[in-house]
Figure (cartoon, one colour):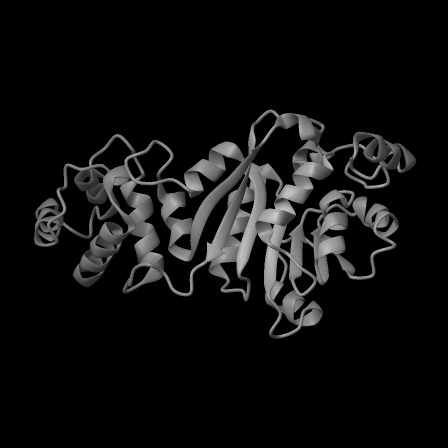
Length: 292
């Protein structure tokens, strides 16, 4: 049975909320975990031990932070809500390997935070119950900033997790899939019921694990252009690749020029974006990059 002293129980969470007269802010996507077993599963899947450094985003009142502190070497928790800082300083007072940083992760200098709190050769992971309304911007920042992190294990909305871990020819597969899988190997490790949150969210949740690749699976001439081509290919999902690219290159390339490029690389312009593999998108991007 979970220790009743842990933060992640309904009783203890209610006690903390009442003590501080804390009211949830819907605008910040605050849903606190109240099940220690789920937290144990997150830590098990992340493979954390006392040598690991962990960055947590949105610690809330410290339910996951506490469990991370028990298992990890160092924990740095970034919290945007000023009202939660004194609560966290109280609930985590006994854990001397935890540092609470009052910052918006989207504006934070994460490289500076890492160099301040972690040792140079330390294995660093991101583990978090992310606010669902800004999951994608947070993850894309983490991936595109080339941070010295090995793995990201996050609780996110099930639908978004499915998009990030999708394969071609499926409804979930799209530009977000390609963006995430360019940098990482994505795997949904478990589903999480609504009942383990307070308050309960309106959506189902999943734990997504992203393992950083040593290098991307494809070679592209220009990363920004590659992602532009991917987004353009999914701009109108029902439209063919040729039609989406015609819209993208309007005023730059003629329809004939677009058709010629597609023929040269042997990609059928009547296909839709969701049928292309990441390798085919790289081929597409590189071919058009040489044309413009």
